[in-house]
Every structure is written in C-alpha cells, then in structure tokens.
Amino acid sequence: MKVASRVSLKAYNTFGINSTAQYFAEVSSVAELQELLGDEQWQRTPKLILGGGSNLLFTSHFNGLVIKIGIGGIEVVEENHQEVWIKVGAGENWHQLVIYCIERVWGGIENLSLIPGTVGAAPMQNIGAYGVEIKDVFESLEAVEISIWIVRRFSSDYCYFGYRVCVFKNIYKGQFIITSVVFRLNKQPLLNTSYGAIKEVLVERLGKDNLNSASIRDVSDAVIHIRQSKLPDPAEIGNAGSFFKNPVVPASKFEALKQEYRNVPGYPVSETEVKVPAGWLIEQAGWKGKRFGEVGVHDRQSLVLVNHGAATF
Ligand SMILES: Cc1cc2nc3c(=O)[nH]c(=O)nc-3n(C[C@H](O)[C@H](O)[C@H](O)COP(=O)(O)OP(=O)(O)OC[C@H]3O[C@@H](n4cnc5c(N)ncnc54)[C@H](O)[C@@H]3O)c2cc1C
Image (cartoon, rainbow, N blue to C red; front, side, top):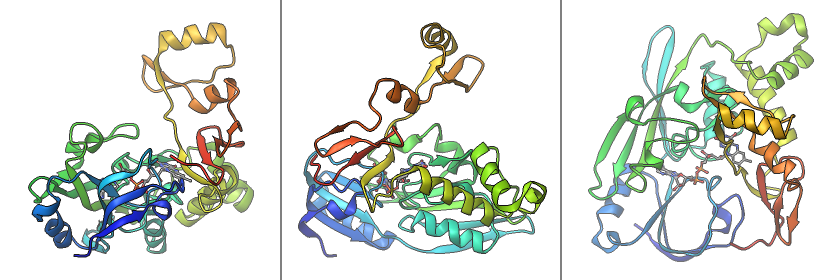
C-alpha cells in the first residue's frame, strides 16, 4: 500500500489549518486497513484516524501516520415490512447517506441532514441535531482493534452513547477504528418535528392544514434550509461547526445563576440537572463576532469558531 510522506492536511480539515502529516495513507477496505496496521514498520508509530476532518482542530504538525478512512459501500442486511437494516462503510459521506435513504423513503436520519463528515465518525460523538441523535437509529458497528488488527462488533449497549460521546471517546479512546455501521430505518417513517424551527418552515412551505402530508424529504429540506441560514459553510469560511458543548449544571446551580442573571435560559435534562446554552454564555461574555487576527467567533452563531483565512494552529 502507498504511504506518502509529508502531506499537507489543509484540504483534509474543514478549519483549513495547514498542518502536515509525517506519513499519510488512505485505506479503501478492511483488508487494506488490517494490512497497514499489521505492518511492523507502523506498529509503534502514533496514528491519527481521519474521516472528513469536520470535527478536528490540528494544534501542531502530526508526527505519525494519518490513516484516512475511505471504506465505502451500502448494503441491505435485513428487512421486513416495517424496517430495514443497512450496513454502511465508514468512509461513506454522511449527508449522501441521508439523501440515499430519503430517496428510498427510509426514515430516521432526515433530521441529521447536511451534517458534514463520514459515517464512521458519526458514532464517535453520537452526532445529533434537531431532536435526533444517531443512537436513535443505531444497531451496531464493526471496528478494527488497532493493536491486534482484528475486527470486533459492538451493539448499541456496548457503545454507551451519551451527549456527543460514546465509549470510543473515553475508555476505548485510540484503540479502535470504525469500519462500518448498521442502521435500523423505518419504512413507514414517523416524522420528528419537535423542534419549533422545523415546524415553522413546514407551515410556511406546506400551509398549516397540510402538515400531515409532510414527508421525510420535506423535513430534510427544512433542516437544510435552517442549517444554511444559521451555520457558516466551511467551503466559504473555515470552521468545525459548534465548537462547544452546552454545559449541564445541577438544578441548584441553575437557580443560583438565575438570581444573578434573570434571563439565563435553561432546559431541564433530568429532575436534578439543567442544560444551559453555551451560545448564550459566550454571547453574554461579549465574544460573539469577536476577532483576533485570523481567528474568531462567528458573528451569527457564537458556538462556532472560525478561521478568517490564514489562521495557523
Ligand atoms: C458546519 C458544520 C456543522 C456541523 N454540525 C454538526 C451537528 O449538527 N451535529 C453534530 O453532531 N456535529 C456537527 N458537526 C461536527 C461534525 O460534522 C461531526 O462530528 C462529524 O461526525 C465528523 O465527521 P468527520 O468524518 O469529519 O470526522 P473527523 O473530523 O475526521 O474525525 C472526528 C473524530 O473521529 C475520529 N474518527 C473519524 N473517523 C473514525 C473512524 N472511522 N474510526 C475511529 N475514529 C474515527 C477522528 O480521529 C477524530 O477524533 C458539524 C461540523 C461542521 C463543520
């Protein structure tokens, strides 16, 4: 397999940071990946797994081997009159998969339209948007264990999905490379329009009385419309989407905050905890739209850090 030396990663991360990989290889099958991991030359070399580079910020050059996951393929592995299970290669583009499912009227991931990146990275942070997370449609995944290069299967119970987290980001960090994911989708989709903004767009486009006729494609189109109006396009300005997680604080802490800041928004996540929007906190701190040379906080979306053009790590 071809392993290149000194490769610029600028085109491989949506922040557009010009970091250099000491070594770089792209794998297009599980066998190729196993062959690479099994090669003695690379066994002690630090490794970085790369999908679409839309959730990464390089903070130095990478003195090791970057492995770009290019494993493709979408296949139906099981189906009945209600549901279909599809196995998808980790290198497939996430949004293209969403469109592929919408064309076949397989519901479940339409709310996750237009999230950049690959299928293999999606479980890593349990991607989520507009009331849906990948865990809602996730059946299982296959991953190669880096140290012994064998394939293991993880069902949902063993992935420990949480808010933008799963087992591969904590106790198994750096130990596995996801090669495929199986999703369970619905052939008679139930729409999730619990997010007010989606409903507003649907009413505007279809009329209030026609909401019942909305399809998963209508929901996807609404999500695309909302995202395009709110989030900066990495093709125009370097960014990695929302950079910050919303802090979850004890309800007592939230009450104390409220005494000081009467307008602080909060969303209960359990009886004892409240989620506080990080965007609101950043805005209150006066950082929305702030710029320091080539880096800054986006002027419409304070959760998003941006590269104004020539930012370095
Ligand atoms: C404009 C914009 C909007 C976004 N909106 C959202 C959103 O609404 N919701 C959301 O959840 N995220 C969002 N994101 C973040 C990002 O798109 C997701 O986290 C996406 O899943 C990252 O995929 P990727 O292939 O680009 O991963 P990368 O950035 O390449 O990698 C991310 C992490 O996963 C690891 N990794 C990648 N592939 C594999 C693999 N096959 N096996 C093991 N580890 C792997 C990498 O080492 C790295 O640690 C947004 C990003 C942008 C730029």
